[in-house]
Length: 485
Image (cartoon, rainbow, N blue to C red; front, side, top):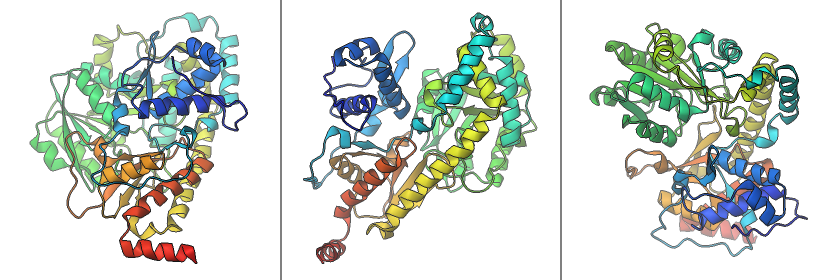
């Protein structure tokens, strides 16, 4: 059983104290990948807190990527937790002598969102409304592709926000991107060769492979996935994130999108899976047209999720299928039950139809943009400003830091860990071994959405201070002299 020393009088909520303690157990190796955690009831009894407190802590760690759930089995350490661990550096990194505790640990996770901004009161009101008005229908089974009213509401949302014309009959609702990708492998055929962006979304690659598909990583260039490499590798399906590539932040220009469509239509049986996972969270200008809206041959599958705009734990995503594939699904795979509970689907219908999602998106874009500006202002005032370039500010919930210092990626990460900061380098997102190139900067992937203003300020300042060690010696001497005077 986990032994966690809680401080009831602390300003930090109990669920956050529990979450921090579990991350420390993972970081120290006391909890291994795929290891099962105590049940909510057992841990709550052991710590003498409510079950809701433990559940909230577990759900926060799920959203941050440390844990995952299995239906009716409980919570487990995420198998990809090794992405947060790195080899020790080749040279010693100075360790801060300031007093730090596990509560000081800050994780710049790319998987979380700001859960404190979730519209709990609105969602609770709509949930009560669903329970009182549709109590009987909640017990009925749903169509395989999901509640028709929800698919209709999603179609209206896509038309309003992405200029995508589709019908409810083309929309497949599923419990997150991983579930939908697994279904798409069955629909398209595991015998096809799938291309993924390299670097790219790690779980997408794992999901495709675990579904039996042959997967190959295709390198990126300045405009997105390399068309030359795509042609050479004999793939039939390309999984891409054109609106805001993860983790590089590249926004695919219209010309490259058109070239990708030309590739798909050049041979029968080729498809593009367009993962538009955070297109609603764009801070500068209007989003470029979705590839799906440019498609006239029925070769693009549009994929999106509410995990980034609402909360990861809702586990509601959707795919928009070409008409031919929607008919094929009804013929071959409609025996599957809907993977999203009816209660959440009915609630989301009201949330979309009554304009709450639009209001929430507008508010969150302001919140996240302010946090980006905060990080930028901290960097501008720091001695490291000339050595670090902040990239990918146009959209999404992470930034890319190009670090021009005489050190390796692992040394940057190890220095951060010594300061109780968890970050990821871009090498963690490559399909093959990544060794970088000579005379190029190291790239650090910095997620900021799940941290509040105080955590961002403290964490980013501490991170930059930890990297001062890698500055040229003459610059360090100058800084020391200025600080002493």
